[in-house]
Image (cartoon, helix red, strand yellow):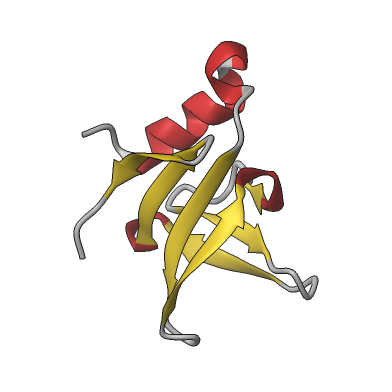
Length: 84
């Protein structure tokens, strides 16, 4: 399995692969639920080596560690998943 940080980098930098619609699903401990966010609403700052920032629908932004990512969807098809 490809590490999640490598998959996110490929989505970001590979023009052919990245032209699809991606959704990232991660565990939100406060909501006690799996949250899905479109790739367009995440930021991958260079100083965040172990996660990314997610922009919520209400405009708040928070950090998500890579280990909380559970699934990645590409054009409606799950292409990556982690147990847990």
